[in-house]
Amino acid sequence: MAEKNPFPGENNTGHVWDDNLRELKNPPPTWWTIAFWASVVWWVVYGLLYPMWPIGQEPTKGLMGALSDQYEGGWSQIKEYEQGLAEVEQLRAQFETKIQAMTAKEILQDEGLSNYTVASAKVLFGDNCAPCHGRGGQGGPSYPVLADDDWLYGGTVETIEQTISNGRQGVMPAHAGTLGADKVARLAQYVVNLSEGKDDPEGKELFTASGCIACHGMDAKGMQAMGAANLTDAIWRFDEPDRLASAQRTIAHGVNNPGDPETRQAQMPAFGKRLSKDDIKKLAVYVYKFGGGQ
Image (cartoon, rainbow, N blue to C red):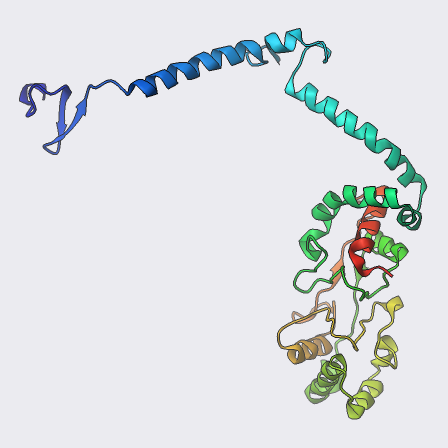
């Protein structure tokens, strides 16, 4: 191919493709060459100064590590990390010891300890609670808001601690079979009217006759001991754009009814075996201080 080079006198290899594509033999730019050799020199210098070269199960200590008397056996990134972690744990120990000996309510009464607990529980909440309740407690789709003052089971710090530890599972019977579509629709309209502050005597009569008062009370404000929702406010456990249709579904299919694909799912897992008692106390304080505690 070199004998048929159509570009004689050009500094190329003689390899030509598609009539004019060829490989030149020009040297790379000077700046690139300098940068290349500088990187090689830096790599060697770094290897001499810091732990790098593998020898058996351990790397070389490097000049910086060998000359350091701050770390036993010489400096390394792992040793520096471990020392920093030990210093942090030493600072936290004074607070952690108090938390072990105090209840969540007592922690709230100690401003300094309460602030520490909130700061240290942020990661705990993000890892265990935020996927459902949001990082700020604003609640995800069909999950309760933790930053308001509306609680199904109560918002005292003791109750929150119990909820985190033991979990919760909502229960509401399905009424489609016992009431029929017309009464379900009428009850749903009554619930919507309640949330909007509208008077509805006929709806209230059906509400009472259908036995809804057994859980939600005569005033429809719910019973926290049973986890029954307050129906008189505008805060909905299963909020959807069409609130009337949402109420109809809940009344007709209930909550956590096995075998019914349309039933509402409302279950919070228990964290009592996943987290330590101290971590649960921290989370209870953290949730309480979102602003919705009682």
